Image (cartoon, rainbow, N blue to C red):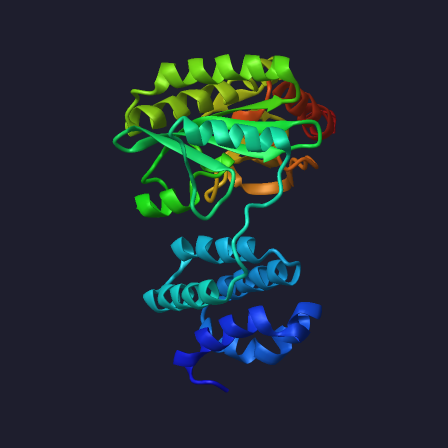
Length: 327
């Protein structure tokens, strides 16, 4: 086995030059798995992350795999792990294929040109993420994404120091849709949509362009409250009382039914839990279910329309809440 100090170079060189690996990435893991174990011996999460990087490389997504590798740096648990990842990145950059902008629709590329000409910067390592400094620690963000019928435009304000507390990291990666603290979305499919989007996005920018980072975060909290307030008018007539982000209804035999809006600790997503528990102890649960919606965007609450929120509430009420009341 190679010495630990050489592992990064061996690993990086081979993932881009090994033809056998290109055919079957599992075979590569079999050959170099020991090196990966040595490199990240105490980090299962790092190994899983590297496995995802390998899969992207196998699929031919070289630049995406490199970006994904870089995105792991803020999660490194030790300085040694961070240094090893940085060495991997450095070696990968020497071997990576020539950088080319991924193929996008004509409309997408037109919007990209307009944003660049309007003094927006595109994230160096994440295509489609654009931003322009607004105040000292905030930026106006626009992310473009091709859709089947047009171009999705996510726009909003983000803290430039939010991601890992590192402004350089923000400059390299921009803001993901679910990391932009205050955000909206507009799908542009035709000229009329384009005209409407231009006015709506411009008005939004003018309204909040002078907000400080703290004011943007306060605005986000206001939006969170408004989102959660949609649930109360539906649950209150059924006998639920709200406390924080939980609505509870007393049942019988010393039990209660709770509907809870739980914010993810790792993203800006909300999850919804329904449980029956002791009246005096929420965590003494007798039954527990998480609301399951087969739509990855349904929990991205700032990008949900009024109709989507209403549909979510009615779906949850019909499938998860009312059956437990009737029991």
